[in-house]
Image (tube, rainbow, N blue to C red; front, side, top):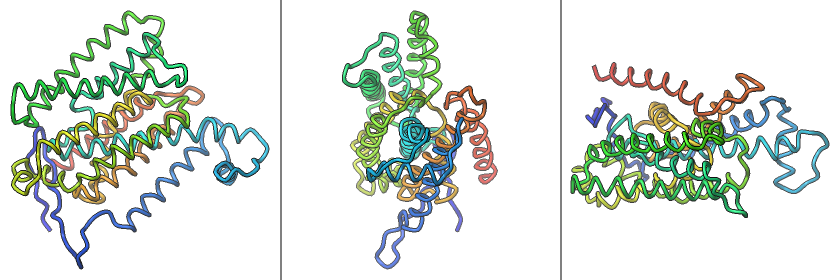
Length: 365
């Protein structure tokens, strides 16, 4: 079957496959695919927990996790605190962050009809980073939850950024076209970058901490962080999945979506809010991690196709696997020195994106 290519802003994106009906069943993410993606994700998760500065046997790792879940007696040795207090919380946070950033990227690429879009296209990630940097620079915390100050400011600035960007887009263009939103998002990101540089220049005693955080790192992540990420992913990721069918229509054109009865402005607003909230939570915990939401949906699209009913669930697993492997490389490449995870994703993501973009251009020629 010949695959059509839709022209989008800034590039080309394959149009979503039409919904088919086979025996009254809607085409979507199949049970076999779900099991396969889940098994691969769990296998990579086990690998990342086992491998590190101190390598642990797989059997010991699984035994410790199993006993912790069912509150059974723990085996003796140093492996228990390493697994339960350090590696497992970190790997869980990395997986959930990758899943969240990836589904945001897949949603934004469909919503804006732009293969270069990801969750940070609107400038919301920059706004969330500004809030978190302000919290770090001025030491804003809450006594009960030390990380809550950074998280609250990151989420608040993410929503404030969204409000500013959408308000400007509405004033300039009543229809709030994707071109206008993207342009304002780029300008807003540049504006926020200048403010970040100004804050860093005055926060000399925290420059190292802020710089490392802006490159992305989940060092010191806790189970509390993982629970917050999981809750955000369930609520806002579920909202994004709820609009998979509408995203298929958006990927063709907004006029097409409007003609088949999609409330375009309401759906666009809900999706933008969901993406902003997820990015705010991820940035507040892991810092700025680039290229996950940009590259992973493209790689997953090559496997499951462009239908968002299959693409978005697959992006959850693909993003988790990609970021876990990137974090593993960051931990062991220059051991005992640990690289920021954002450095690894930028190197790998830039290379993969060039390959993907080249393949798209060659397929279109």
